[in-house]
Image (tube, rainbow over all chains, first blue to last red; front, side):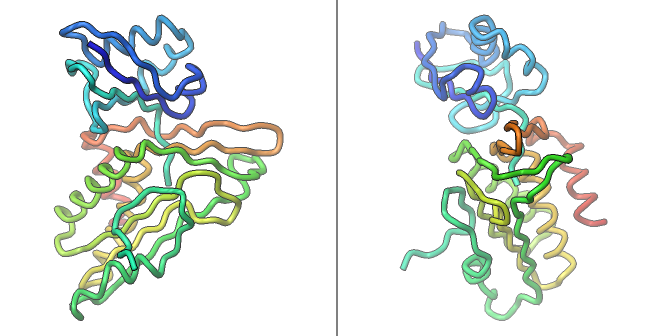
Length: 81
Length: 161
């Protein structure tokens, strides 16, 4: 199955792409996708403790399992206002 | 004419008056309307800021605003909220966020307005990139977690101080 990954702010600068498509296996979680990304872009490792994540534009925990077509987002610490 | 939505995020310039009009007078039952505008400041942490760029995950930001609206309705029953956040390039002095609360009594309207901006800073998936003389930097504030009860309690504490 495939999921779309959205990246914002400095995470997007690190990866050079606002959006990536990743292959995922049944049982894969948000955390699995994050670990794939960190392997591909080691600079992301510094965000391990400070990112938030979302699935289909709703906050979700890293252990949430993914379904085909999900949109996963990784959010660095926010600074709106 | 299209009605002004109560909660939005987008590139359009912000103004308070349309929000005040949109939130309405509650058929005469309101006793207070509180307004807040957040502005782009020309200095930050000793740096001379030249402009800011705001980026948002728009559909999720809108849901965060709805969550803030629901939190306010639970904490201050009867208070109504309007909240607009701007994204894109903003110059010094321009408004990045506009918040209006309305209530029968001023205390609740003031508290809810302050609470709303604190919660935007906690849980809205929005980021600002600061351009200053000599460089630029993404500003990273709070790790966003809407279920963090401590952050929510802290927002309520400053709102009611």
